[in-house]
Image (cartoon, rainbow, N blue to C red; front, side):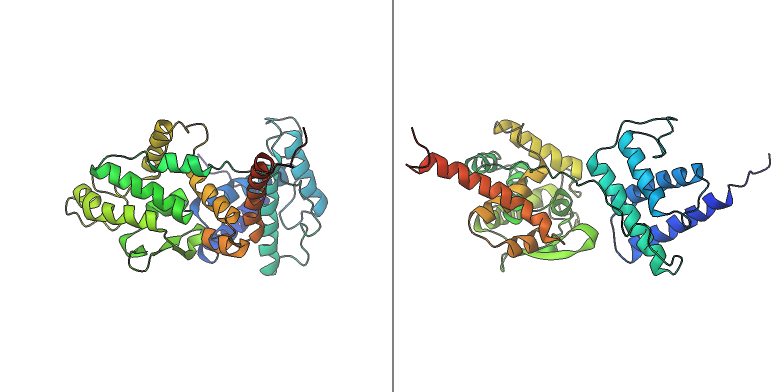
Length: 322
């Protein structure tokens, strides 16, 4: 059977996408999940361009706006023609696809393939930012007290929960920690965040104590002498997986009666909110969280101010009038 050549427009677009993704991976260091999302977004945009018999280099601002508006109405390719229709995309999804296209066209212009950027005047729907769920100080104390045993798994779980809360670690950062990333004497650790960016975060005394006990009595019993570099390990002595971490967090959240309020990111959100409520400055919290943009960190100021207002109205004798 003869091979059917893809249209020149489509093949050219695929080459542009592959070049762009290579740039993101090797020069920007973006994660595999981000690259996969960008690839999916761009291929969807490519189908839209094919319907209009356009190349990426011919698309104008109106075409890109039509694509995003079609997503908001609900269609597979953004064309809104009713074929293979999908439910309307959420503002957050459209915001992500808009950001992807902006980055893509900036790359094309940097490479000298375009004289102007058709996304320069593009306006995307404002993304609503949902406030993350956080635990109170009492709730976090209850959660951290759940791994009560002295067996290796309990010592590991206690150290894991304490460290995630003490340092504001993402799940991927916690399971990626290696022994050499933790300096017990100095009381700091090196976390590898998104885009392979590293940051140094101090470790509180409670977490250091739990970590020392785990390293002395828990981890050796789990690894059984195997040459494992990662800090947190499973029952077989290998690196703890993301799924394994989720199960640990879930199990202790259920025991603490916090199943509805608790997810692995909750410890990170709680870390940031408690620091700000305690008077820590925004820039320091930004650095400890590894946020590239301070506006991301500012989200937690709303949580902390809401909590302060709640305390104020409960405690101040003239906050309310009877």
